[in-house]
Amino acid sequence: MFENFFEANRDSANKARQGKQTTGKKVIGVMPEYFPSEVITALGAYPVYFKGTQIPISRADTYLQSFSCTTTRTILEQAMKGDMDYVDGFVFTTMCDNQQNLSEVFRKLFPEKPVINFMIPFANSASIRQQHLKEELDKAIGALEPVTGKKFTQEGFKQAVSVYERRHALVKRLYDLRKRNPKALSAYEFYSIFKAGSVLPVEEFIGMLGPVVSELEKKAVQPVEHRVIISGITPEPLELAKVFDELEMYIVDDDMTNGARQHSKGVLAGVDAVSIDNFVFGGSPCSTLYNPAKDRRVYLADKAAENKAAVVLWQIKFCEPEAFERPDLMAYLKQHGIQVTSFEVELQMNSFEGIKTRLQAFKEIL
Ligand code: SF4
Image (cartoon, rainbow, N blue to C red; front, side, top):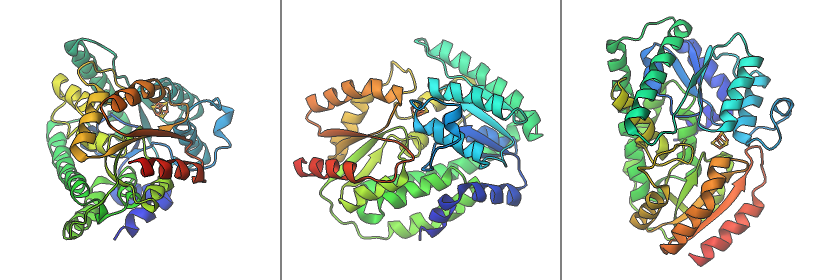
């Protein structure tokens, strides 16, 4: 049932090259979150999202310090290896220093490919934030038009929105299903679907996901004992999800970019200031977004209580936004009687025995 998704992830560069060929569209590489796919699709292009992956790093270390997070280092490695040769232009969101730095490296190393920055403001005032985001979006659309060769139109946008509404409805069904029946699919299968969704043309992804969700919904609900919520930036290396499966620790929710953070934003309703603000800041709280109106501690505590689940912080080494939030987040959850633990990973790692032992010990106290 999941083989098509696994296959897309086995060689994502090739899958995207095929996607480019079959759709005949220009490809826009998005680094790694918060720029709306709806806009890229409305411009007749095909968005591919890069969120870091499990590959050995050799070339990227010439340009990035070894204490940069492995999300950025593996993204650069993919590019230098030639795994982004099919990309016609890039959009970076300025969510942290590492991403900002990476956009400059891309600009220098790949001068033939336009690099567009979509700056997300740190502002206390919602109206200033909205205004700024609107200006940034207009600038990005203006810069994308020559890359895609298409003009942005309201008609094109409406069509793109209807596609993403279908995608969103399916993803919501999948999330609801997992919460209701965590045994319906493994964590590895679940996150493989989302990883494939970052690289596949959206229509193809919808076509693959629809029958899978319908099939999974037919499964009888089975009780589970150990429910957890994972929290962090991205559930990579994906192989690590298998450890949760082996330990029978059932992931029932998350706030990851390759997961709930993506779909909790909903679909971009318009290209006006309020809609783009709702899109960027409307989803689950994120350590990379400054949003005084949303407290991630409260959000996670509520989620954990609602799901009768413990919390596992899946952290990427040298990710400053996450590292800064972790102590306070853990203290708050503990104070509110929620079991919480954390571990750090590097994306290129392939041995998880140490983490498995820690998770096993954590499971025993649940
Ligand atoms: S948010 Fe964290 S993991 Fe993502 S690019 Fe920035 S430092 Fe790296």
